[in-house]
Image (cartoon, rainbow, N blue to C red; front, side):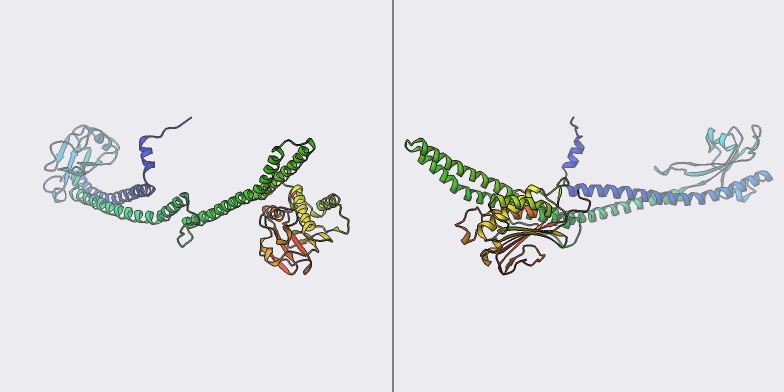
Length: 486
């Protein structure tokens, strides 16, 4: 089910983010300023109306007193002096009125009915548009308990002009409108500059990302100083670019290494098959050629599997079992000893108890097998396999007493297809230690090696060689599994 958006919504989303931010900010400011202006207006209106109501109450009391005294008329200066009033009967008929108010009642029929029971305040004339006779009116019942008969005074209606009050409110509205418009303009300008300053790094990120998309390598985002959200985003993106560059370089190296290492055996295999097909041969020769081709093919498959294993090593998950090295390594060493036809003296194991580690037994066997292959091919017996615990790590060490590796080769020993000059005449592809390094790193561990008195520790933690001065020592450190790991 698809949803359609209205055209205004689509147009709104197509506007630049900066414009949308300013528009939203201006709308919010308009609401706030309008609310503040309305509050000020209502407070001023309330204050002015209270003053008028106080004047009306005084005037109503004077008219009521004059009415009760029978002195209502020109002889009562308190009533006549600028006062506006009407005396109504219960039907709303005017019984007495000040000059200018004799034409019609100031109250409507409904207001008359209400004024016979309680005081009524009302306004005549509007603030806008300007009225010619703006009045504030107060109607007070003379007999609130029982309405007098028709023709008798029942309601005292007094009024004052609102000219000054209305003029003050109109002036206030004009001043508030001008002030709010000025404040809105200033706030919008400040908001625009703030939004522009905040989004400028994003635009720079976009331009630099476009360069990277176009094929530029080694480009990093220019990160401004500070520690706000955009700065942290820039650092994260730079870290991501570094990881992508590393992955791309690893992929290029893999393709280069694979093409280099596979080209020679593939060429030899093609040459053998072409030579076998060049002329008729006896069945025995053809069988021998096919066996050689099958051997080369098996080697190619093993090489391809190793390359893929070096390139991709997933990290252990929650389902990965916790493995005890001392228990798991014993049968692995024994199987290797039997397969390589070695004696207990040639290959020995001293396996102390270690904390459990999260690693699949098949990968652990691959680590041990590769390390033992290197020791057998390039070292010399006796070969020892030991386990121990070091600083929260389970430590696996394989040591041989051979001639060791040259000191200048040590930093490159774990690189793919790296082989010392003395090892180029022995079988192997130069991927064994590289595969071990990939497995160990994927499990959060560390791999270090030393040969003779030369050491190589890629990680900052330093662990001395267990056999300094003799042969080669490869050390694998695997982090101990959590205490609740199964």
